[in-house]
Image (cartoon, rainbow, N blue to C red; front, top):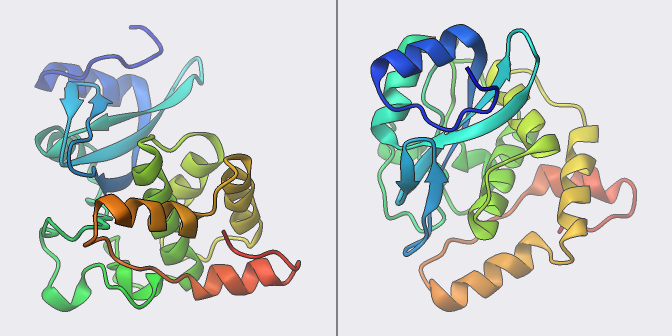
Length: 216
């Protein structure tokens, strides 16, 4: 089997992928109207679920995206929970989440439904980074890679364990390399999508301010 996963069509193929690779679901995000993204079963629209994978022998690693049905099939094999959906337009309902537990507008801590089977509380740094990273990926029409993939993987592996503050600065470095703040990107997107929500990230802002950095 090739190291890079180019296709995951069919139940047998999915079973083989889960045998040959370490596979972990890391995020789930909406696509803005009119956007598509390449998935391992074809082009995707509306939403996509992102999986991280690493070959058990060669250690080659990457990510792939799938739609709803493929995501459910993989999660059934892996026994992993479906991550919460980050949808800045609120045009889709999150399965299994009550009205009061969805993505809110007052702050990221209220926007991040608890994940995992333990029911333990999710630290604010984890919830805010999850929402912020997924928002950035939605606005850039990208799949999380490198530092962003690593942070999201850490959240899914141990959702109730607070991430180190270093992860906030790693995220800030990614934002800085694109010369626009997350706030600016959201503001520009609101011109096309006036129903886009507003977000605040108080925990990330507090951590960033320790080194006299403004949160993008």
